Length: 240
Ligand code: SF4
Image (cartoon, rainbow, N blue to C red):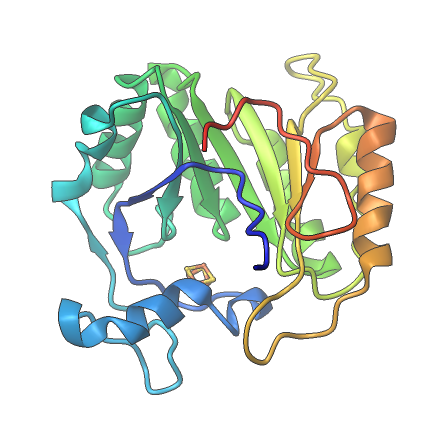
């Protein structure tokens, strides 16, 4: 059986629905799952199996980490920084993260702009120490646009998800950027990388990911590859 390379323990599915906003969304696995179960959940996707802009925040799921028996690494689904998620709900989610210090929370977004704006304004309440803020990029244009925003986003930890990797991407300069405001030398704490999977998957060359792995090793940044053939380093202990 094919091994699933997973870097988190549990999904915190706070946001239902989304809007495709990147070439990386073309085969959105989350929408594919929603499409498969839409009869049971009354949650509709488009005929092409993509999200249809309908977004709802699941207040009822806020308490899930509270109920968890053991400390876990939680991945927030889908995109907490979607425009349709009210700022009050995002604030509430970060308050819950703060109140659950035994867990690690991964807040991964394609909307680097809104994450930056929100966390800039939230910074006066303090940095949530167990929240890892991540941005996804799938090509060089997205990397050039979104990584600088990630580097300036107030966060205890920042990670980069290069997935699905649709071409060679150079992130070397980001790995060596010094934040002159904080004097911080290691602005990215983890890089995750992976090919597209599933029906219609687009071409991928392991050499593209190997270059990022080598750059991470040179900068002493953990690199996690979602597949065979490269490293699976994580900066935390994941309990499976
Ligand atoms: S941002 Fe993520 S969840 Fe939303 S459509 Fe794109 S791939 Fe799917």
